[in-house]
Image 1 (cartoon, rainbow, N blue to C red):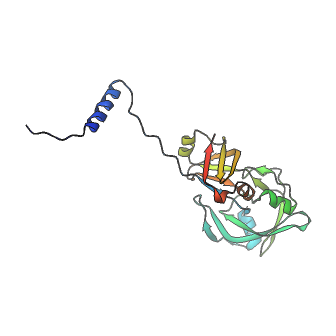
Image 2: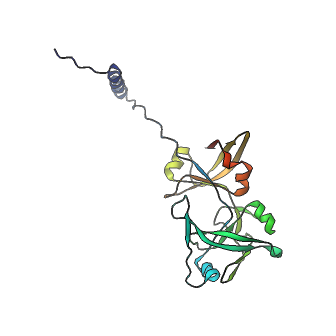
Image 3: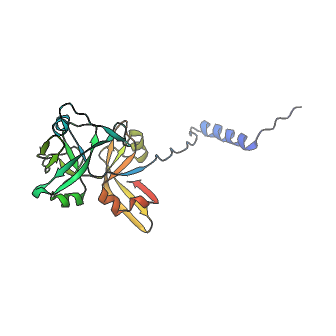
Length: 224
């Protein structure tokens, strides 16, 4: 009689699976791996409308891509502008991010607002009603924004599959804990923004990044 060498552990696994299925219990599924979490510092920047691009840089001008950003389709442009606040306080060279938008918007950190003399409201990007304005100075012209200057609310971009992993939906709130050496900082009420075609990424401004020493982070946790 021929004997076949079969691993007894393999046989045990098969038998266990058959028993579970006969009892109506599905086999154990491996948990989905945690998605890669990226935390980025969103330094001061400007979003422009097509009309304002032409006013500031000339008719027919198109922004020049300098560096692709982590989120697909977004980029840092080579172009910069001077941002002027009340009493002629200014930031001489603020980067423009593309692509263009329907309405121009300036996103600054809290300390930038102090420097310019602008009381910055904390807003979600695009929520510009009732916000203060500023003056943008380019090589070919000047644009006076009546509104649109904000401190961007800390937030996390998620694909729907990543939102499912964390058990959250669009506009929910989460917490971010950053461990940097002996420093542990928790940011509460991080806004969840769920959309197709995005990567999992938390955006903090420069003040928040410096406060938690994000450059030396040893461990980062995103949780409800």
